[in-house]
Amino acid sequence: MNILLLGGGGREHALAWKLAQSPLCGKLWATPGNPGIAQEATCIDLDAMDHAAVVEFCRANAIGLVVIGPEAPLVDGLADSLRDAGVPAFGPSRAAAQLEGSKGFTKDLCERANIPTARFYRTTSLEEAWGKLKRFDPPFVLKADGLAAGKGVIIAETREEAQHALHDLFEGKFGSAGSEVVIEQFLTGEEASFFALTDGETIVPLGTAQDHKRVGEGDTGPNTGGMGAYSPAPVLTEELQSQVMREIVEPTVRTMREEGMPYVGVLYAGLMLTKDDPQLIEYNARFGDPECQVLMMRLESDLVELMLACAQGRLGEVKAPELSDDFALTVVMAAEGYPGTPKKGGTISLGKAEADGAKIFHAGTQLDGETLTANGGRVLNVTARGPTATEAQKAAYAAVDAIEFPDGFCRRDIGQREVRRERHG
Ligand code: AMP
Ligand code: GLY
Image (cartoon, rainbow, N blue to C red):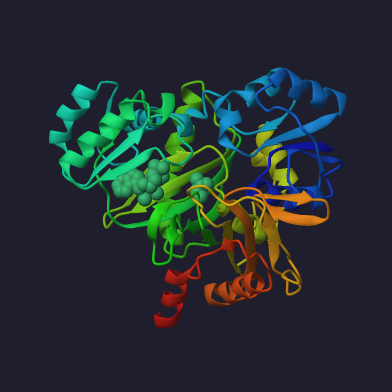
């Protein structure tokens, strides 16, 4: 079966790598792809926002499955256009992608379905928002309602800071994403991510992960898209995972179906493990980046079979996903300047980095003739496996050290929390 993969980052390189391993995979296309993805797929230039062009490509090339990597085309309704044209798509409809596209939508759903989440208030008015701050204690959590490329959350320590931030949000600092704002109660605990696949009815867990959002070691400095990740996240014990399925994921999928917005694809739940219970911080309607890279590194099942079963409403008929007991850990190598303005064009030599079983996923690279160069903030995802977090970390950094990328940097403490736990029990 021919497959079209949308996207061009490290997440999509990991998906392409796994899709291509399936005996069900015929010709694999990717758009726009990147030099790493090009090792697995034929890269083409299609505008994902031009739904008619994507549908036409699928018809002309007998595409049997479209895998939509990033959130923007999902929120834009590409999966609807494909399904309307009879092309199976892995990814939620426009209506179902509101779980990521509108924080207010998700909070309201949590209220209707009695899902544990921080107390909140939704508003479209600056004056009202200022007034409602009184109902919350510092630090104040303020969120732009819509997609803001991971930058729409502000944690303000004081009321004054919160007032300034609300002003910025409503003044359009995040474009139309900020025309509505959610104010939330601040939650404390450890954060972890839980992934599930669903065809709208059947739900199967797909593992856990933790990422490192801050740019600097020891979780300091500005937020990024993620500087590294590891899987599993043992802090999400079997028992907690069952609780997350029962109290958060299942009621979400059921309510979406009952309300005529069946959710198809991967549901990524960002959780806060508070001292009382796991609470939902946010949903994403796609795989995390770089969490996907570590999940794919552990996935032993046929990804094409699973994704197609989701797209065709047959998830109950296929074997549930199996993940290796190994840890997988990925270190993001970023270009100097990230998350501000990353330096473009830095040369990269991968050398023998993959010699000992590590896998280098390309996130932001391009080929200048024969030379691999940086073309983005997050450039490479250096990923390795091991029986413990300690060994996976060691293998990943050994691969990092084999790479020459003078204009790049990485955090040296990815997975450190888990390594410390392993050391001290
Ligand atoms: P989000 O984009 O919703 O994942 O938020 C980004 C980050 O902000 C999360 O990963 C948390 O670290 C933090 N955050 C979001 N909501 C809350 C909350 N209610 N309490 C504490 N931290 C939060
Ligand atoms: N790594 C966080 C995300 O993909 O949203």
